[in-house]
Length: 493
Ligand code: HEM
Image (cartoon, rainbow, N blue to C red; front, side, top):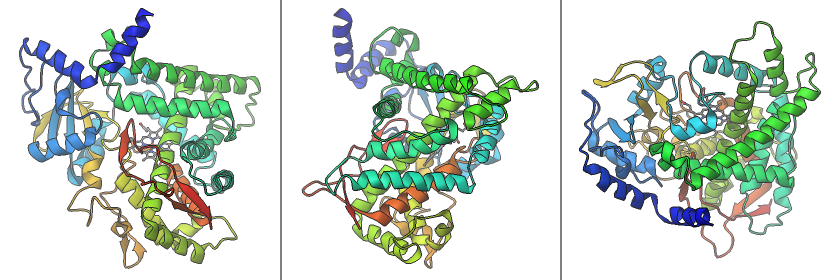
């Protein structure tokens, strides 16, 4: 009872109120200055650092404002962690590519460490990361990436998805979890060897847990990162995050156990089988063990579900908001593919407008606005500033995707950004998958899914706002920037 009361009180206090209270209290103990030759930034308070300089509901926009004031390389302190943020194409490429080796690690952040245990693909470092990444890339390739079998799987899943949307009969509906399920089924079939029906209540519940965990972790996990030892013992959103990840891991663990029962080394069905084979090899690298199998599989499931499905949800929203652009995509689909066959990857080169629309959705929705954090592996000079080993580095992708010098109308949805004389035009400042040694491992898979799912949906339906409802492009900040929940009508064509 007391715990419940505490929990309600805790949730009722906003992060800002708690931070102001602590800041006033801690101010009495004096300021902590920036390290020598460090990039500029706002004054950091003791212990809290610059937490009060950021609006945690739109951190990337606060960072944009601070960069306007302090320049292309800025530094911020959060708790006892120092961040350096670089802006603009030249510097982002400098840290991700030209000096990539010095920024290849992921930092230690308390909540991420608790969830990801520095294992798997996303948050591991050193030889373990290299081995897991190399293995995952080659196994994804063997199980379909870049092959026709993957295309066929996505085409088949597109049919399930369009059937499910057809069944909505043009009535307003929220497409969130149908899209999530369809996208997730692709990575599930590669990693687990099977897909899940859209009415499978257990799988739907898992997708909801994942969605909730990624939202809370990006929006409410900061107190835990500031005061991990204290927060561990207090109720609040961080406990939900930890509980949800635990349940997701149990789900993956169960699937691994089932695989072990009927594992046949001479016939690899999917990623888990291939990993079991690798573990059984006498000369396998030391990072191939059960815990890493669990974490690599979990990372593929998480990264392969959230990002692509969020992008597709943005895509439908933009199509409903810009009917004239949707009509142009439909005209291109009708002339290149028609209505009698499904879209295929070979069509993409003949569909510059559709391709430009997908790129523009990715640019403007900017779903990983500050990239996934990196950390310096040794003291490094960036634009004349000294960045010591162990500093967290954020490559500000927002600064590229909204750069006034790179885009004609940075704040307006405009497929023309990717077109020249009617042909598709690549842009250097477009880096939604990041770049360099840790570039998104699923880029090719994501690009294939985005083209095939999006084109199949727009081929079959016209998406519109429900009568008397206005659709908005407002975002919700979690680990990714996603649209606020919306309803839409899908009219069969
Ligand atoms: C539109 C979809 C996607 C976007 C925008 C996206 C974006 C990103 C970004 C920005 C990173 C961080 C790279 C860095 O640190 O420099 C990343 C990493 C990663 N992504 Fe994606 N991603 C997408 C889809 C996928 C898919 C479908 C998979 C599944 C295979 C995936 C798996 C990963 C993994 C495993 C990493 C960690 C790589 C590493 O640390 O070595 N992503 N992604």
